[in-house]
Amino acid sequence: MLITLTVTAQESAQDSTVYKQFHKFPLLTLDHFNYPKTSFNTDTDRGELEINEQRLTMQIAFPLKEKKTYLFNSINYTLFNYHTTFDQSALDIHESYHSIQLSIGLISVLPKRWRLVFNAMPTIASDFHKRLNSDDFIFQVSAMATKRASQNFQYGFGLAYTSRFGNLTIIPLVSLTYKKEKWLTSVILPAYASQYYVFNDKYRLGLKAAVYGNLYNVHFDDITSTLDLNRLSYSRITLGPEFQFKLIGDLYVNTGCGIAVRNVFQVQDDNLNTELDLDVKSRAYLNIGLRILK
Image (tube, rainbow, N blue to C red; front, side, top):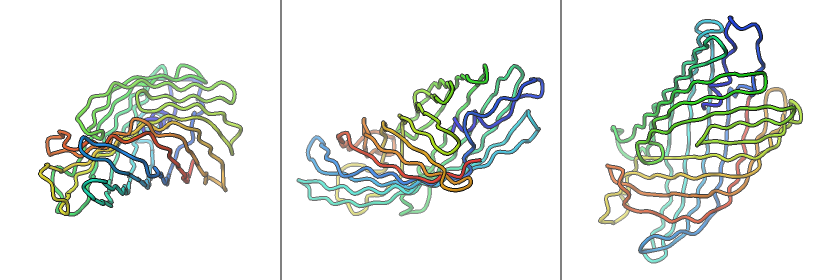
């Protein structure tokens, strides 16, 4: 999201040169992620876990004041499915959770090619088994300052505040975008890093590392347990190649695969204390998606 925000606005009217954007703007994205079955261990049991995830994002940016202030709006829907079995307790759990995220961003274009980017992302993340309450809501905010130093280089820094990874966390951010001939590097630490070779407007191939996190308010009504099980948190780091090609017009196909490491799958209580921690092994993943890019 921050990558989209930091490359959207045009330069200030005080600057004599208008630089091209590093990336095309994604109006709509649709992705399917599959994390095949893998084993896990707990303190008292072991079993297997399989995850599928679908994500749909629609977004738009438009000027409030031409070349000075831009408003960014988006909506993101995620369907999270998992199937887990426990060997000793003979539990077989197959659940689906939903996340609906609104994003409101503001981009202020400043002199000397600086931009200030603010983004608020209220989110509902739940199994929707019961009436919504405050535990179903996640609120995330971020702020970043970026500098377009030249036609081929941009850098920035900022802060993000989020509970999406299971605990309320303030995360410092550092961004860098660099283009040399057909090579394009995009980094927002500690969340994202990519290196692409852009053949032309139709094809690009590269490597990407990204951090993903999910937190859902859930109700395990069918499970008999003395534990206080109220929230499910799943985070992972994906590493692997990615290929994007133009299908027709502004429609692109995006494919990726690789390995998901540091898989943290936890069930928490209302205070975000971990009640159940699945030690999930590193696993392969597959991603295929569609993009409408302008």
